[in-house]
Length: 417
Image 1 (cartoon, rainbow, N blue to C red):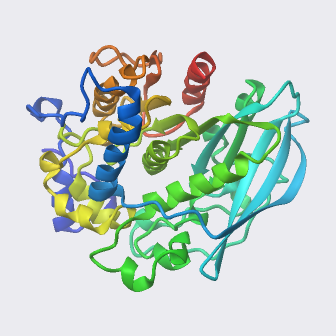
Image 2 (image 1 turned 60 degrees about the horizontal axis):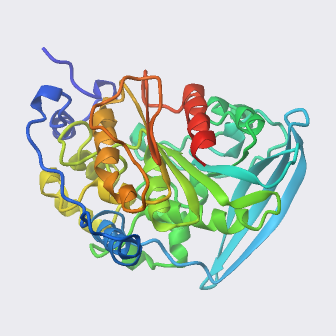
C-alpha cells in the first residue's frame, strides 16, 4: 500500500486527497500539447521586442502573476554600515532602500559584498533570501534587524522561519559569498519578508499597502499577488545597484530558489536590466510546464498559496491542461538575454524534466536574435551544465541550492556573460 503524501503533517482528509491527485508517475503523464509561442521563422528582433514580448508579458500578467506595481514616488539609498569582510576579501556595504508612496514608507535592507581587489567594475549576483540577511553568512558584522514573529496559523507551511542572532550563517552554504567573490563577482541579498510576508495574511505588513487598499486586496478582483511584490523588490534593488560605483550595471544577475526562483523569472521577464536570470528548482508557476501533468499542480498551489498570484488564477484549479499559456512563455520573454534553469534530480514536485522542456520550448525566441538556446529535447544526465544563451543544469539530490549549484552557475556565467 502506498504511503500517504505529507503524512507527517497529518493533513485533513480533503487536503490529503488533493495531495494524492498530484501525479508522480512518469508513465502516467500521457500525451500533452505545449501551447505554441506566437512567433515563426519570419519574426524579426524588432517585432519580438516591440510586439511579441509585450504580448507574452500581458498574458502572463492576466492569467497568473498579475501586475508589478509602479516605481514608488520617492526613494533614498542610505548606507547603514560599511567595512571589511571575509578577512579582507571584500567590502561589506549595508544599504537601506527607503521607499515612499502615497504617504507610506517601507525600508528594504540590502546586504552587498564587493571584491576588494578592484580591476574595473564588477558584475553582481543578487538574490532574495528566505530567512534574513544574517542567515546568509557567518559575518558577525551583518546587522540583525529585530522583528515580531508571525504566528504559525496552525500549519508549518506558514511558519515564520526568519532567524535571530542564534541563526547567523545557518544558510551560508546556499550563498557561498566567498566563492562568488573569489571568482570576481559582487554579491547581494535581501530578505523577501521585507517586501511581502509569505502567508495569506501578509498584506497588512507589505509593500502592497502602498498601492492597494485592504478592500482591493481581499476582493475577488485582486489584480496581483506576492510574487509580483517580490519582483517589485528586485526592481527597486536594481535601482540601487546601478548607482553603486564599483558595479557594472550591464552585468546584473538575478537568481532565486523555489518560490523565489519563480520570482526571479517574473522579474527577469519584466526588467531588461537583468543580464542573466537564474531559476533553481522553481517548479509550478516557475520553470516547469503545467501541461505536462507531473509534480505539484495548480490545485496544490491555490490551496496553500493563494496570495502568490492574482485572485483569478483560482479559475485554473484542476484545469492545468486548459491553461492557455505555459511557462516557456515566461522564459521566452527574457530573450535575448541570458537564462539559466537548474533542477534537482529527486525534486519530483518541481518536475525536473518539465523544467528542462520548458527551457527547450522557449529556445526559439533566442534564435530570432541569432542566438542559441537548448538544441535538443533529450533530458540530460546530472552533473554538467548544457546549453548556450539558455543554460540548463541538473544536480543529483533534493530540493535545495548547494555549493555544487554555485560552481556550475559560476562556470556558466563566466563562459557566457
